[in-house]
Length: 37
Image 1 (cartoon, rainbow, N blue to C red):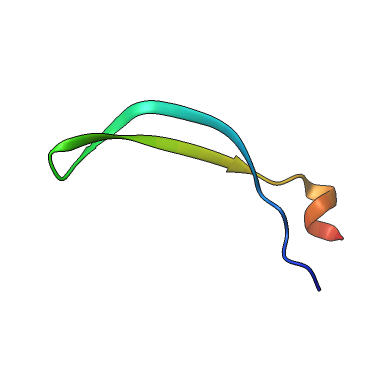
Image 2: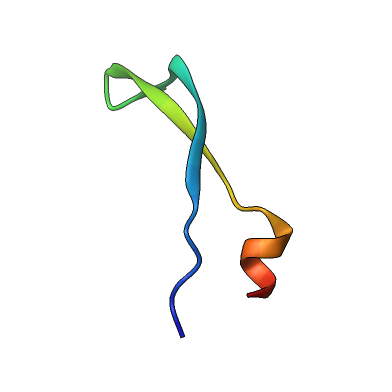
């Protein structure tokens, strides 16, 4: 069985301050149809 293919849907620039620097948060999504295959 192939692993489901999550796709990047968005990026929030400089969203979090971690270890002294701002980092982006990346949002990934997977369609229900792709999960069920």
